[in-house]
Image (tube, rainbow, N blue to C red; front, side, top):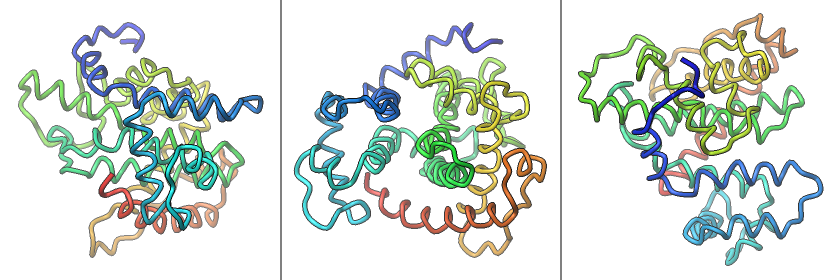
Length: 278
């Protein structure tokens, strides 16, 4: 079933409950990618949602993001932290809370989906830097790659479908659709560009993604890195070997992959602690 043909009125209702915060991110990204953007337009966009703006200022003063002195306005946050860090804060605030609930149909306890989203976002960011692609786009793809899980889990619960332990995350389906399908549907409603939507949609079949196949392959690598970064304490198992075909397609060496893995693990540990109260 094509995503554009979905008639998921219940999912549409869920989307409305999330308010305007998720819609800020794609609009902000478009502004940041345009060299002719007036900085005032960026500030105005962030300030449209006063509650979100207040949370950005609060987050800017957290130990992880703080520039070393108190930030009191959005202007100061942008000036002293930079657009990339403000974008990161906004993405965390827009999606962090909704992705911290337990997902019984996917067998994920509270906060586990959020941990995975953060680790995948950081891995995608690192891979993009190594391949010369826009890190902000990669970060967003990684952060939202599993957003569909939230909607699938909620609808299965509302329909009182008996939960069963899935062998793989793609085995859990709503109306025959995986969370990747539903996530892409939701992201299109939020007006994310196809550059970001398509890799999410094809994350289980990256080689079938014609328009954004490169990013879809990166997401496959990033999810492998994520699995290592979020492993339980005391788990001594090493990271899984990357798909050499994908590495070749992306012009990445094993050393490049290892560097991204190490960097992701270090950043994830710090960012997870920093965002625990967001």
